[in-house]
Amino acid sequence: MYSKSEMLFGKAKEVIPGGVNSPVRAFKSVGGTPIFMERAKGAYMYDVDGNRYIDYINSWGPMILGHAYEPVVKAIQEYATYSTSFGAPTELEIKIAELIVSMVPNIDMVRMVNSGTEACMTALRLARGYTGRNKFIKFEGCYHGHADAFLVSAGSGVATLGLQSIPGVTATVADDTLTAPYNNLPAVEQLVATYAGQIAAIIVEPIAGNMGCILPQPGFLEGLRKICDEHNIVLIFDEVMTGFRLARGGAQELLGIKADLVTFGKIIGAGMPVGAIAGPREIMENLAPAGKVYQAGTLSGNPIAMIAGYTLLQTLNDNPVIYQQLAEKATYLVNGLKEAFGAAGIVHSINQIGSMLSAHFTEYPIIDFSSASAANNEIFRRFFHAMLERGVYLPPSAFESWFMSNALTTEDLDQTIAAAKSAMQAIK
Ligand code: PMP
Image 1: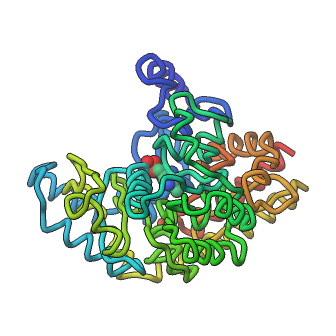
Image 2: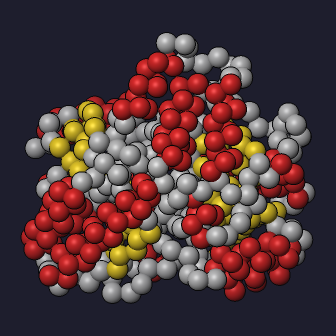
């Protein structure tokens, strides 16, 4: 069933560390051979062995309207003939920046980069340059890319591989990273009191997606906003996952809470390598060449990436009903999954908001990294493989969110629910 993938994985391990270009793809925590993909269209991915999967990763978020979305493909094809890169400014960069500013609350300016990692790394440098302070607070189990400063108590692949400290990240760098449990305001207050006047930023996934999907408890983000206001700390919302996915204006719009800086990735590039930092003029103009906080990129604002992102964002901007449809599909799926797990007598805790969700196998609510870590990973592992065999592609780790696309039909959702029922009966 997976013989070509197995053969390719063997070859890949000879020339690529661990056989993959990003760790979670290696199926380390669920075991087995990663599936090598050949093509994808709409809600489906097709592997090199000819198997078809209903996709619940969607490239970890960007494919919100499904794979190979026709207008995006056409735009890329057209722009590729003009050149794949100029290394000089284009009008398109203004158009996408204007569109983003019109969609996202509380921002005046946007700087384009090439990944979510770059966006968060730059946002932190900018906050430090703006405040003249060194330390910052992040939350256990949140992931903000692989820049050194963020690889402390990180989620996503770091949590999946169970890494406590990362060789190569020096103690000097890590010392400036302060951590608190997600949803724990008193822990943040304590840090702010202990390091009074030294904290440049608090960075948070407003809805966490890198330890599974975890919702902020009422008052948590409001409390962070208040602390930041009182202590002149820059509040950074990492909306790499939530941006343009939960609403046109991301979590800021959905939850009605203002951030000082916002980072984006994934959807903003429609699957091309793009990230962005956005914020008010007063902070953003500290970036070079307007200001002294240096940041640059040979391929930043790349025309192919910009036209892909612009085309997708325009569609989302013009059709806000997409968000309602996605949320309805997610609720339908979650109800079906609950029924499937319940019928097999498997305890579960499902978190969902809009088109992001995750299932943990525990009777307790999942509100932070320790509750996520305490869930039954063995059931998750078996569930993952049973679903894969039934043609449903889930994230290969319990420390990741599922991302739904609007290409999913009710029939796809029913097939997924039927697969979950049969999978759970098989493994219970
Ligand atoms: N922030 C968040 C919230 C993310 O989910 C990710 C990636 N999953 C990143 C930052 C890093 O983005 P990238 O992988 O594009 O560098």
